[in-house]
Length: 235
Image (cartoon, rainbow, N blue to C red; front, side, top):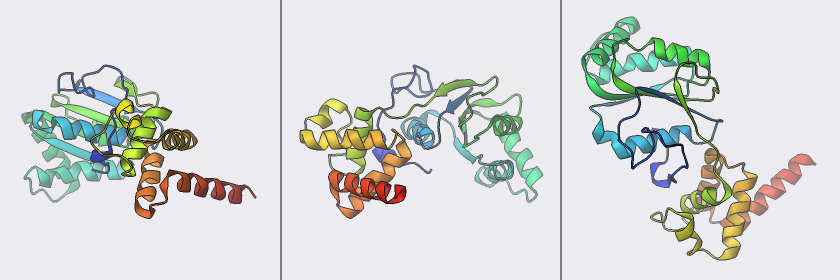
């Protein structure tokens, strides 16, 4: 999975069975997580899997960035499921048969960015499938699918994410209150400023935290570097 589970910060999402840790660990049959690119949709699903994998008979992950990749990634599940079909169409039929005859599974279509790709992904599912499906998408219109919007981080929650990702606070600290008690006021202010400038996007914050960790430049150093680069670009 392409997400950093250990750096995940609890997202403020609507109360649906898919995401909240205190809710039943079985999602609705099909749910789409919708949001801007880089907002953390894949990371949110990955954390759900991390927490609740044991609640499912199998967890299957399909890359849905394009129609060809979607079909190819879906077909490749056949090998994981123990089939030996060689042609892609036969592999797809084998996976569909498995989905039809097993229950309790979770199937994830990641990066089905348009309604067209969402429809293509749904078309791969047998009508009598007995499991649960999650989609991540940038599409705001998801057709008949139940949809949950994944928003950007607010400044405070994003600051927690940044400070944990950059290893400036202990990874075990997960709430705004506990983190603020452990960092100087200036560092907290710098962290929230940086998150705001990054638009609250999880991917951008993750990249900033990784850079701070690797270079040991600190929050102020990164903010200064970003300002210099922005000024240089504008000039």
